[in-house]
Image (cartoon, rainbow over all chains, first blue to last red; front, side):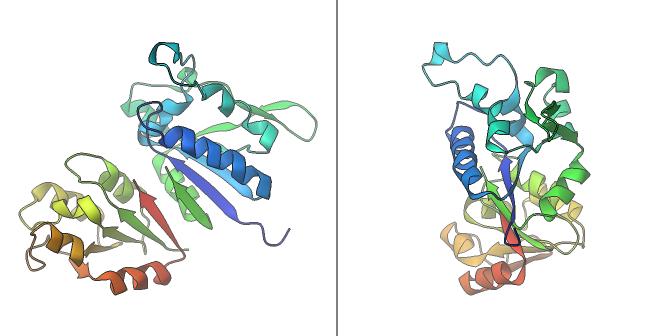
Length: 133
Length: 103
């Protein structure tokens, strides 16, 4: 499809304290219907959105974290997480939930790629549209 | 593919400006708007150091009406910052391939 555009959703806020993370996820799911080239970026406090074992029952809000693991079913296969943002917050890749998608051979492959800040800047620069949350 | 980066949060409260600078590439522009302009005062050393780290590769701007609204004279901004009006904002937006907001 020649009119496919590269869309990047930039996530820079921790979940639950504000509505940014949930709103971003909802826009990603809506946008998935338009069959564009979609990537998600997680940097700064946005890396907290992908931390595993989030339990929100005590704060009375919906836990939307499991939805990230369904992104592959919506053909959203590229999640870039910034290494420096993880390190600054005492996190490693092992603290993040496992998010996969099916490849053409119907094998589950990892959707999450840890990238350094310079690579993240390149990824951002390569987009047609950047949506910030 | 150049980008206009807009920053609308005070550098004293959030890391948005630092993050924008860390991800901007040569040829990009950074525009301070809304609360971000409180860091634009010439005496604001924190912003001056941050903007200096952006180097000469990026062009740096601040929105005049937001300065005026906060009592900051357009003549008293950090060296290297260019003051623009709303028409200048539009020129920056159309002069780059895309705009990226650092919220």
